[in-house]
Length: 408
Image (cartoon, rainbow, N blue to C red; front, side, top):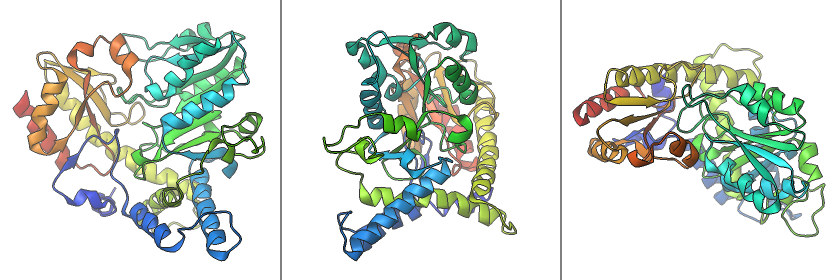
């Protein structure tokens, strides 16, 4: 992967600062900024009117949503719901779908998820919904399928889990889990926030019922997307005004409408991965956009694996360091979100000492509070987290390692 080509696409990288807190939010593409400004300049009107500018603006937004649907391989643009955050979209989903459930019905959550895909479900206990927790094996920090099967019952309505842990960086076997869940007659809801910047998503192949991700963590604006199978979305009542019907998908889940300019800017994200492909494989003929996405993410995975391996190999040489999660940089097992604790220093101390080096890393529980609690890491102020994306460089990692050497 040509790192120089990549970095020219992100205006924020021009400053002398190393961004390694990308799991909290990535740098934004210049093309996203340009499209946001373009909307303000050319299409800044209310949608739904008959006059030409409004009609054109509606078409432009529809094109962006269509691009996102294609990007994750959804079958219909009506399966794409745009909202302010993943947390909000999952909360809306839990409110709407729980109206179809009865007291005594069950939901399974995990102890490794960000609370966005936990609290919205556990709060349903007020309605009589029973919550069961699928826990990681405390030794391997991986999920056991048999544990899930033992939790599933005829009353299980939904299983919620993350595609990638925002603490461990582990890629969970979502496709296999989804089959188990469907065989038990339940639905599958996946938080893909920590996965989407690193691997291509295919909701059709995964066969998940709901899938969410935050666009500000995949190089876009501070917004989010939720995929839902159309027949499931149509079945629910929404949270919009009373006169919207079941057929008003996705609008019935988008009260007050979407943010027009940010939704328009989303179209730049899939285009970036097309451009990344075309730069590296200029001789490609009759290549579909889907194949271009795949090859671009293959490049990204290989580059990120090299960077992860550098960091993890370094950390394993330090006796006072405990890596939390997968200790190899294998792109088949993890993304470059790496967490660790120091035997002597609190996590907050390590991160504070890093700040003068102009390297942005972070500490805490990252809203995966149940995992930090179960790993008994609260007294350490949670974990130290280094989270990379493909615009990070070997030279940046070398500077990080030099700084850590001085701190330790």
